[in-house]
Length: 164
Image (cartoon, rainbow, N blue to C red):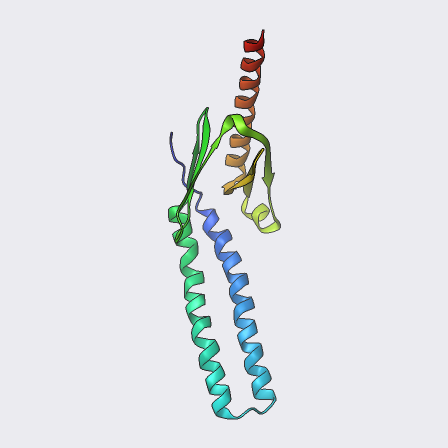
């Protein structure tokens, strides 16, 4: 089975999401400092809070900038007639194998930013759970769904013929 890598435009999406998170994080830290300064807190308290909030915020910002690249490098997916395989994870590696014969539903999902970047998630539903194949190009997602749908139809026909 050929394992596929994600399209480079996925990095843009993940960086946009990271930037939104970073803005919220920095906004919260700046808000705390503004409140302290406006309430005329002693300068040693402002300095202590600045350091205790600022250092973790800087570390998290660094992590936010690095994680999309690491996630991108660690993500691979593929499928054949019998199964779908997804490998992902930076700190905790995960390998998911979904037997095609257990698939019940296939969904393609897009948010507004994903639509602009022509990306989609594919959700594979089985009797036991749902699993997302993360941020494929919309074209890849449609091809995957079409191929799996065709495969499922073939399997159903085979099962009907076995019963006869």
